[in-house]
Amino acid sequence: MATVKVGLLGFGTVGSGVYEIIQNYQERLKSLLGKNVEIAGILVNDITKERGISPDILVTSHFDEILSIPDLDVVIEAIVGIEPGYTYLTKAIDKGCHIITANKELFAHKGRELKQKAQEKNVEISYEASVAGGVPVIGTLHQLLQVNSVVKIEAILNGTSNYILSEIRNKRTAFIDALQSAQAKGYAEADPSNDVDGYDAFYKIVILTELLFGQRPEWKWIERKGVRDISLNHIRLAESFGFRLKHVASLLYKDGALKIDVEPKVVSEEHPLYSVEGVDNAVVITGDLVGQLKLQGPGAGKLPTASAIIEDLVNVFNSVHHAHVKKDVKLLNDIDDQLQTWFVIGNSNDQLDGVILFEESIKDQNELITGRLVKTTGREIKKLKAKDNALTVYPFTGTPAQPAKKAFVSA
Image (tube, rainbow, N blue to C red; front, side):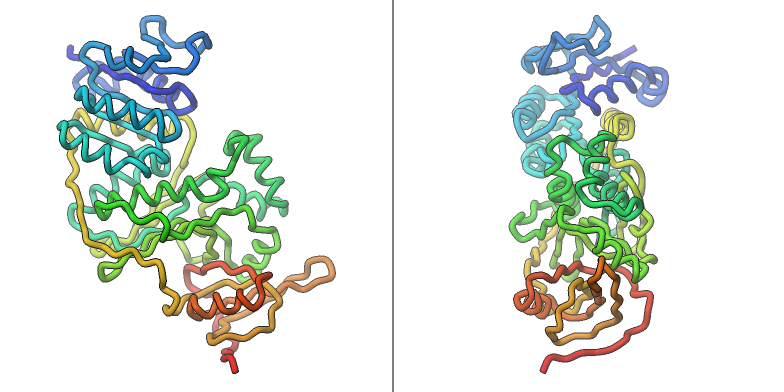
């Protein structure tokens, strides 16, 4: 029987998961592909470390040895960072190998170049595991794009940040304590910047944007904020309205214009992201024909992410091809004059043009802290913050659960 030969780059959490699935599910893979699947070589940093890898598999710290494997069919990349992964995958494409990657930072920066090179060399490149781990968002979007135009995405794309916000709310704890809990459970790295400062989710929404519109957006126009500055009081105030704070990556396409942001937002109970807790990821997709779909599941972890890679492997060798999409879009970076809904936290008495939908206060020791749901423009919000930089403002998404209380207009 014919054999699919695989070169595996990296043997950390994801790489070892890929190894386990291929080794333990040979019969299932054989029934899907009509071929055996063989891991022919594994690239690691330290070849002296004991990993429990079968002795008949090449284990090396030199990529050229992987590339020299006779009849190598596919390279699976499960390392981190842009380099050396980009160089490795470029060389593998030049050799005629299919490519599967879980590296979102690499694909956000270099995905367009890799896809173009793969097309020139007539090989497949797949990257399901680079966004939302085991949640099949890439495959779903490929399927939708055959008929639908995707007009909106709202997503929780970083399980670490979602866990931290859930922990603060449920345990009534501080950000630093929730972060330490995430680190103790292995959800956050010793340096958590990539997660808590919003870079991880940012890379993922960039990948989805390029998939949907065939072009890489100008990164400088994409708002990116993390969760470091969210306090228990912010979460308590949101709760007093029946809302929750979530770290949301969003994309809105309308009339040829595109708005992308990655930031904490307040969501109502009716919003599909309201109930997404812990380390789960969720992607809410709106197509112009199909309407709204929600995908939810584990966004990280050994087997969920490795499962997405194996799905890509099966699709590559079952000749699942996807059309290349190219749309002319303008990335919006200034929507200051559009009416939006905002959640404003603080005790400012400054006025602005707009409507207070409703407001509530909570007591923090001996001080009352007020939250207001406000409908106004981004321009007015900027003016308000310029007068009082102690205010905290979050965008609101969803349906307000209470009727308007009062309107206010600046003098």
